[in-house]
Length: 150
Image 1 (cartoon, rainbow, N blue to C red):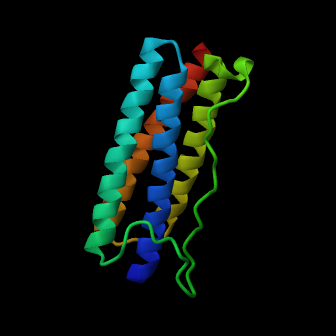
Image 2 (cartoon, one colour; image 1 turned 90 degrees about the vertical axis):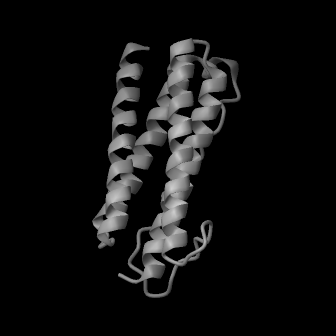
C-alpha cells in the first residue's frame, strides 16, 4: 500500500474523529444530566487527542492533514458521510434522542475504523488505528448502555 493511500485513510479517520468531537461537544451542551455531560466531554476530548495522533502519523508519512483527495488507483475506503447536528425541535432535544444520535455517530465511527483496519496499513500506523478503534468501540458500548438506561 502506498503512502498516499495510507494518508488518505488516515485523513478519513481524522474527519470521522472531527465529526465525533463536534457531536459530543454538541451533546454535552444539550443534555441536562451532569454525568452524561461529563462523559460526552471526555469523549470529545478523546477525539481531539485522536485527531492529533492521526495528524502526527500523516505528517510522519509526508502527507498533509486535511487533504482527502482520493489517490489514483486507490482501493482505500471512502469516509462515511455523517452529519451530527443539534436537534432543532424542542421534543428532539430530550436526552434519549441525544444519546440515540451519539450512538448512531459512534456506530458510523466504529464502521469507519473497521474499514480502515481491513487495509494493509504499516504496522506502526495499524497500532495507532487499532488502539483508537478499541477506545471508540468502548465509547460505543458505553453509549449503548446509556441508551438502554435513558
